[in-house]
Length: 540
Image (cartoon, rainbow, N blue to C red; front, top):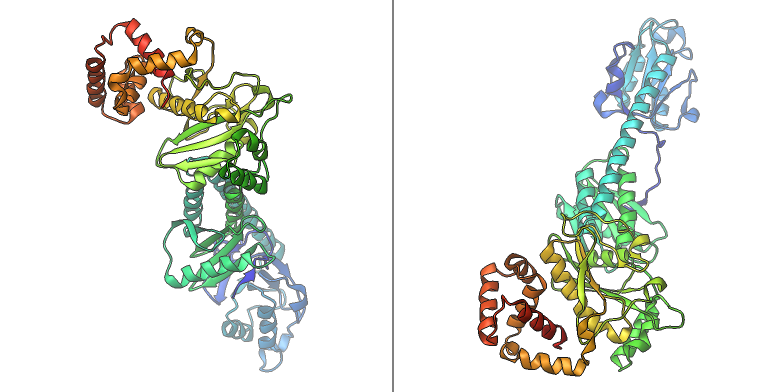
């Protein structure tokens, strides 16, 4: 049966009775009851009342010297030991400590029998040990347990935060959480289906119960619920109000701090699965409908939300991205979009495309030139080994005047800021920038706009010349693509192979084929320059 997760015990971490008995300075001895290693204590309380029930919160080690027990208690029927112990158990007492001397020389046999019958641990406190010393030892052990718990939670928080920054943040967070709790962590979608999971696969009964618990929290005001099935502790956490995502956790045991650790994971998953709003969902839906019905891009762009210039048309960056490891999934792509500051994400094949609104400071730059692709430039120091870049979080994801920043675990190609009418040209810019970033092993490469001699030739004439010059290879797109990449990378076989994801011998063969078909000496810099000019102005 599901129940809302309201802690019934004090928040202070409990300590084992075995740890208290191991203190040589106390000299405590367990007389009867369950093994000390299975008993946990939440505090110590001294009472000489014949009915301590009203004064116990639950989980205490109750200390008594038996003042309320008559001297003649050894006679049968003189004191109701059974009723006394039953009330302690009903109040949730964890154990009973009986002090020998000054009232009683030994622990009464009737008390031993009653504790054994009710399963209450009974501990003998020697005359040399004061009750205050026992209580102080309990609090010292609890303080150590609290410190250990805080360290464990801190380490878990750091690990979960690091997992959330990986290219596959949701699976990484689930794996880290499952490892910490030594159990199973599952992300359920709005329809109740498993989106991702990590950790040990539970039995069918536990799996069904966890899914049912996840459905329970989506339909109730409480955002958290717990249950126990087949000896397995279950917990479900709703990820944000009304969104339908739920984190489910199944663990064979529960340690102090587990709830806090799972709550941290729930917060991170809420951020990762939540849609990053730079405009309302209704406005974006309206923009999509208008595009499908024939509206122009520049007419619907304002509905998507973006930077506004001084009365000018909104400008945007197109970003192409590939994860450094593995293939992108929908959740990691959404997380990348959130980091870049845009919900407009397309995850197709092995490349993620993001349409990012340019801040007002960046709108003064030149737009894309449909007739050419301009240049590409890596981030400062990009030729060096990859390093984390500043400004990778949402607050600094689009730096004024420079565009989107590098993101950990991703390789990015960024276009120039363009008006909506030039999105297709910017898409090509970003694709070429990404190819160069991968070839040069740079975290990010931007399309660089700058005036050049090529701008002096009218676009129409430049395209006609390009088609005539490249006609011999025009029928084989792979040849033109390889020639473009090879020239952009200064004739490097290895880098071209990396950019095109082919073998270097394939690059050599294609370039040799281009030289033969074009009848050109590709070692001549003038020939290379002319071919590069033509490729830049050749439309797809």
